[in-house]
Length: 239
Image 1 (cartoon, rainbow, N blue to C red):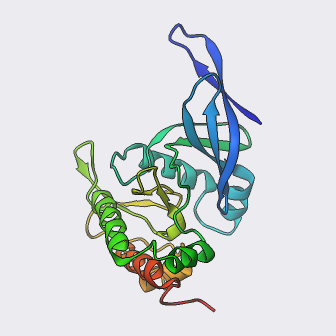
Image 2: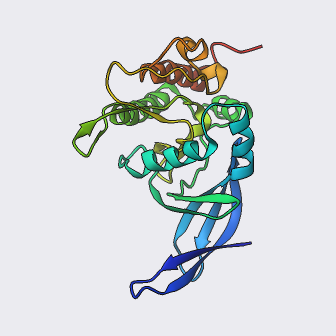
């Protein structure tokens, strides 16, 4: 399978850039992710394809316009540069899909399912020292997001859907945050969000109850992530 992108050359003409799909590496509620290679090059990307039709279905159940969710994800992600955050190279769209080209992390999702997590624990390859290492890298990314400065105007990014499947491992076993589908901006330290979203087992109580929350909700989710890496299950399970 080949994905084509129309690009404007330096002389103003239109050209076609082609990406060869190598394999599927992940799937979310509104999107799929593939490892792709630029045709005629050795350059590799993770290509996230967002299905507009599925997002439109979400729109009908939500007060948030579906297009604004994906565009906000891209706008936030494009401003970020941090060693523990997956780099967003570029994006384009057609009538049916949005295509987001990301840094490819060779080890794909980190412990996205319980079986792979338990397998790691059984062979003792995930010990407390490794969990601490991952934890420090995650905290470094969260600290960066929560104190982001853009165009001399401070705002904070709260993640709202922090969970294990949002993280990737690169070839050097460094953890990277890579999915900003429900990230949002807080204008100042007094700003509060009230949208209830995210995976319940990872989500802070103030998010579920819609009483108003800020970036501290991410720290609750961070604690759940550490607990699950250590014990193989979330501390709280929704029925």
